[in-house]
Image (cartoon, rainbow, N blue to C red; front, side, top):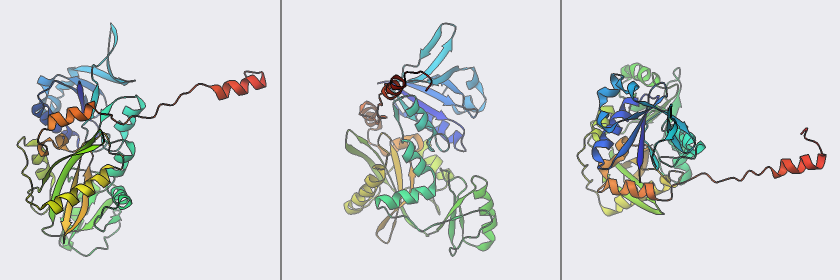
Length: 347
């Protein structure tokens, strides 16, 4: 089974995706094909030996072979013709816009490409934080109260509050506001990244747990439950370090009853179109109740650090019955019948 990793793209999280792909390359022992999508949305085939951060920041990647997305995969063009890249399954490792908003899911489905990653509907619902609230409500998972504001609006919640750009991950643009004097700056930061901002009450010292997993041939495979180390909240730097650090995470010290409830809530979320993807759900536990904080449909380096044998699981998922679009037989019987009845080719 030959795997290809697609990363980069036009996103605020472009650089995080590059780091994520480099980490995956270092973690997996098997040979991988790396397909880089630059900010112009052009594709390049990157040699594994060139998978270094400064290879992309320096622009050296532009000397690599260009790739073109067509039916059944990526292709190279040359004087000798068109050749398809020998990849069986692609991994969508693009974070944020393009990768998690549904664009690549649509492209892969359109061209009949087998891939690991969230499908279109799941991408759309998990990319927008308000739609994520709707998704959770639909499947019976609790979330914190919230409100959406535009730049001119003031939040109705009493302080302290947390501001989050509606369509962004990795805690980019997120701020905690404890005093009115902090609001204006936090608002400006959030609206730098989006035209809508989600506001939630900020709960000091809330317990937070991360759980990743996927479904393989009808059976759920779970990671360990991690209690991430954080300051006030899990900010950009802490998230970045969590998946760029190749050491394994430590399992949370919780009882089996809570672990089972986290898994139950995860399964409810996963069943809403995430089949074929490895996702991570971040939960809050408040006064014994489990709340969904956010869904990571393409978690950093696929949350490999949370799994005991990540490579075996990844290959098992790639070899499983990944979701595919239903085949539709187009035979033109209707057109042939009406043109035959009319006795004319004018229709």
